[in-house]
Length: 347
View 1 (cartoon, rainbow, N blue to C red):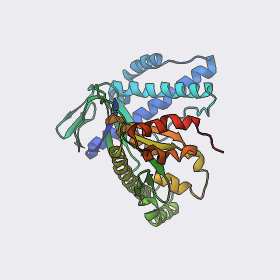
View 2: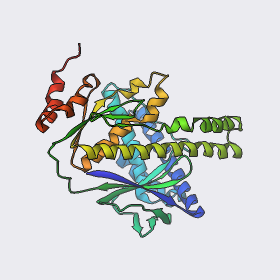
View 3: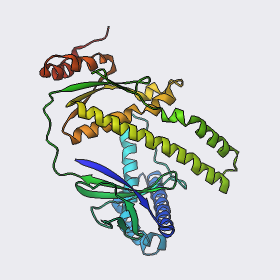
View 4: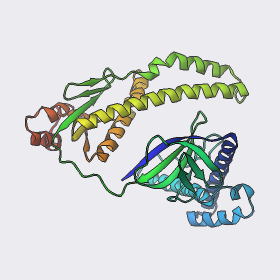
């Protein structure tokens, strides 16, 4: 089972300079690799593979000092990102989806780099994260990591804060729980969550609370000369307000999803088409602020860790969210969700 742990980093000024240089080198390599693949295809209809780009990278590192300063496996991961971007592009073309051709990354648009191999190029010693080519950075490890670390990604957010994200593989799958209790979850705007037991949870609407402050900060930003020092300072203030809203929202969603998962062995959500719903411009802001999709995502992985299950039913079968827990017998609850849904037709 794969999971992720995110910890805040507190680098020194010298370490920030090294981190930023590494990001810039990775960005330039990404753009160069993207240009090489594009040119090879347009000129010769030839698909340049990852292994060919990696061989060229090995030769370039001997001549380029900026490439030489970055850990080799980090650079190889950049090439894998380019290769994966094209694989996803061709997959979308084949499936008839909106293709989205891979784009070049401008300054500020390349925000992370990865040490792709387990325990190679990085290690945690006490309160320090030691990165090859950068040094020992202070890390706030607020909880213990359970499982084997597979990759380490260093990321910078829009406020300039740095984070370490560890992808962890847990060898032992949690034992599956035989569903004996079930709960239906209805998401909405008046009440963020309404359970089939009758319990409701209201969302504090953090975006609405800070909307005036955010709007004032954005107006001040619009008056600055783009690219000036004052513009950069004000842009950082706007980003910090967005980060505060995001952190408060995530905390709320984590708490609610934990309560939902603790209540039953089987959790049933509506399978909402949120992308279509936000086309309603009167409600789009509120729908996105409530983050229903993220709530379902959090509940799903929390349930998986506990050996429980999350089911999505068509929104036309909304009445089943109540039926799921209204049945008198435990067996009927699970049967109602699994069997009645396919046979129901809306008239």
